[in-house]
Amino acid sequence: MKKGTALLADVFRRLDLRATFHIQEQADPNLKISLRYPSIVDALSDEGYEIGLHSHITSTDSKVRYDEISSGASSLCDAGHRVRVFRAGWYFTTTSTINVLERLQIDYDCSPVKNSRVANMRWYDLPDSPYFPSTHDVTRRGSSSVLVIPVTNYRLCLNYWPNQAGERQTAEKAMIRGLKYLGDLSRVMDRPVIAYVTTHSWKPVTENGESIRGWVVERFDKLAAVLSEYEYESFSVSEMGDRWKGLSIEPYWLDAPDVLGSILGWRSPRKHYRLVRSIGSRILALRYRLTGHL
Image (cartoon, rainbow, N blue to C red; front, side, top):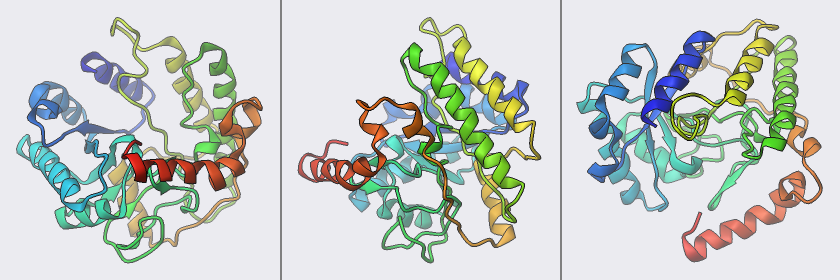
């Protein structure tokens, strides 16, 4: 992580892409990155990157979530970083999380990944755009002051990062197809179309930690090349959120193609979207309720 963060920032800088770096902060002092590696966080901030809060919490209990998130936010604030953005570990945000963020005056939750699931949360019916959620159900629209900014539809493959070398070329082509779908849509829609890409600082780095994996650099280069075909702006999370709120736009849902399903073999459970959505996700939700395992 120590080297990967700087290397990833170099890629974003070269491609002139804005980014938010979500820094892991927990109640446990041993898991506070701002305490263990303050120079990394300060360097990112000094270079103009947004610092967001990233906390791993498996419990849905409101008090547990408040204790973890408030401790993390306080650590970053004490280190001189204003916290406006939250990203839940494993993308596992909840309704209680939204209420905690509201209490702490954190403006944005960018945890949910459209068309995915985690624990007992099913992110299938979310808008494809930012929305203000209900304080009783984060998956529905409501009156919370926290704006949810979903990560782009998982089925569009912008955030599909397979580990197997043989799958990477196919995944890269799928990413281009998904991004071009959004780009072409932006030419005819009267509202902003958001392509939200996310990754981890350690995932793109070689095993010795000395460089970014070549295929990751190539993928970002191709992503930037596709973007250059369209009129676009690059934002950090809070910049995007501020822009969205300033435009006072209603949330929208897209009839997007299932790019992921088109590239996976029949043996892959993720190919069968409707089956995973209707049955698989509910089985996994039941497992979480019974065992607490994500």
